[in-house]
Amino acid sequence: MTVRRAAELLATARQGLALTGAGVSAESGIPTFRGEGGLWTKYDPVKVSSIESFLADPAAYWRVSKERGSIALAARPNPGHEALAAMEAAGRLAAIVTQNTDGLHQDSGSTHVIELHGSGRMVQCLECGSREARADVQRRLDTEMPPHCRSCGSIFLKPTVVLFGEPMPAAALNEAFELARQTDVMLVVGSSLVVYPAAEVPLLAVQSGALMIVVNAEPTPFDRFAEVVIHGRSGEVLPEIGRLISG
Ligand code: NAD
Ligand code: ZN
Image 1 (cartoon, rainbow, N blue to C red):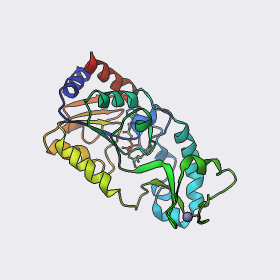
Image 2: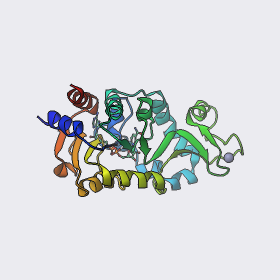
Image 3: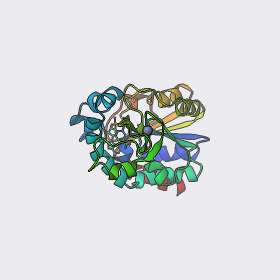
């Protein structure tokens, strides 16, 4: 039984580590990028999500981001997020490294969350550096397109997420790699594992001797390196693993 084996590994983990991707939030109603129904079956990612296109035309960026933002801001954690938070509280996971920018891990009670791609909850002015809650900017998008900085009037107001062509936050990346070197059980959830350097986290963990568990709706390129592979929905599989750990 793969679910039972996953629970056994986590129950005895000295320092468990999770890496999550868009799939963990799919059951909260946030579309993934790749995979069935993924956003990139609708949009060209480099066109809508690169720093170059943002700088060339902030309004075009915000028109697409407006729809996505209203979904993400209204989303609530699902049983998958909750199961991960419970695993951390029970000492089975030391941290969650996430590629998501939706803040749902924190909402579900996880405390040690490393955001590799930034946070969609804040917006920052590229000219004066002032920050504002995304929710406040979201409210004025109906009448203000593109939105302007409240402090300096600039139109270069950008969510604090990492766009294509932007560097990853170095401190978060270093911390993620350090945790990957130390972990003995690496749990990967809802990630296609094709975006680097995020995908290097589980690779480094396995190379450093960790056993890996993959929970994903579809096969991933790393399945062959995993001790346990479960193809299923994280909102169903993770609570099941959680019940077996505590039971
Ligand atoms: P991805 O879209 O590339 O892959 C998602 C994976 O999750 C797919 O393999 C899919 O089969 C799987 N999946 C879908 N529904 C699932 C479910 N219910 N349970 C388990 N697995 C499920 O996502 P990724 O690997 O995170 O790609 C990285 C990029 O996506 C990052 O740049 C990240 O910032 C961005 N992203 C973030 C969000 C968010 O914040 N929620 C949403 C979409 C994309
Ligand atoms: Zn400004």
